[in-house]
Length: 311
Image 1: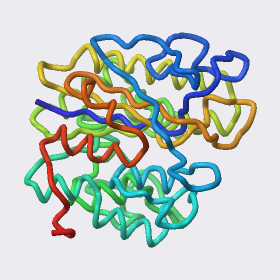
Image 2: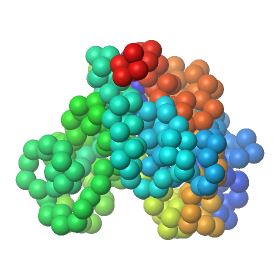
Image 3: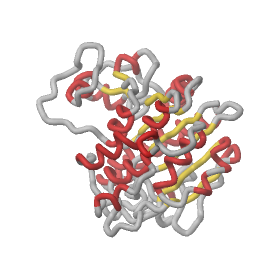
Image 4: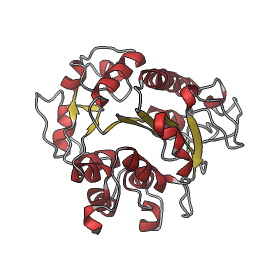
């Protein structure tokens, strides 16, 4: 039995208004709305809406939202604010101690992170990476919450060589963006990307993938970019649902709203959809806010009890 986790940046439950909400243009799997409406999910899947504000004033942001998802701790409450972009030192410490990937490793479970990175980027972050760098990075780079969390579990980051060999996925699923930068990677369909992800997930306890072009489209206020990103993502997710084995679960969620309201380039106060397929479908109802994602994922992966740091 495998657990697949797809994190989608910047998708909330907004108004079903196609003038501003690309999710209202067609029944995407993530097309769920603030009034409780939305398309039925295939294969017995279930959806709930989770609070991303977490009792803290202001618009939810990526650093705190993602840190909350990946630890189960209320990161905005810890800081007393929502933090955009990349985690600061306090959030990095939180992730290093409470990361779900560390919890999995401590329990003897195996996790994979399917996203493939350029060698130069991983080395700039201080992570080991084999192969020749594709380019030179002269600016300072900072790790995202997802990379800090995965590193805390001692996981192996995948490179573009892995993507070429069918052992990893580019962030856009198709490798189109890498090709536009002059990097040679095989172009794939979202369905082919799903096949690779399902293969990576086989025999693991948690396989994760991060998709952030939805958030970029929201900030750009671009309906065309939003629909393009949603089309690729939806094809990927539908292929994953179709490929789930007996006992396999798929969980899909986001960290904050954005793309669902293109009338503004800012994040929104919207709740975020949480989708569950397979055994996860019976358990997503317990997720009321972002702090509920880590217990859900760990429980589905068979990890119970407090982290070692709290024992």
